[in-house]
Image 1 (cartoon, rainbow, N blue to C red):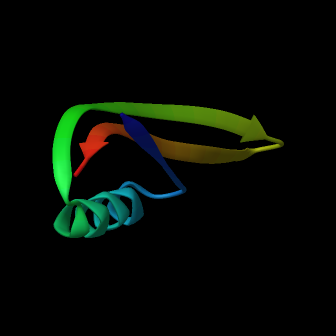
Image 2: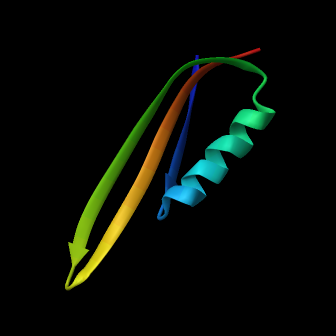
Image 3: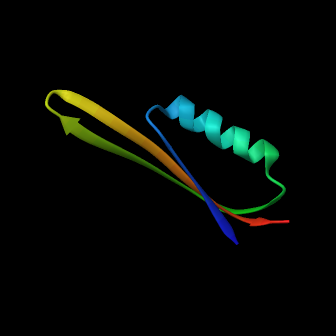
Length: 58
């Protein structure tokens, strides 16, 4: 069993990264975990979109 972790600043970037990985994956997906976090720096909001794919490689 293996994991692949993605971390992007925009949800579309995360979507593209995950889709690219999935299109080349030679194995079985066990689960996908998704999370969004928000941080405040002064008056700026910083978003972090992340996903972890748990899979079995063939």
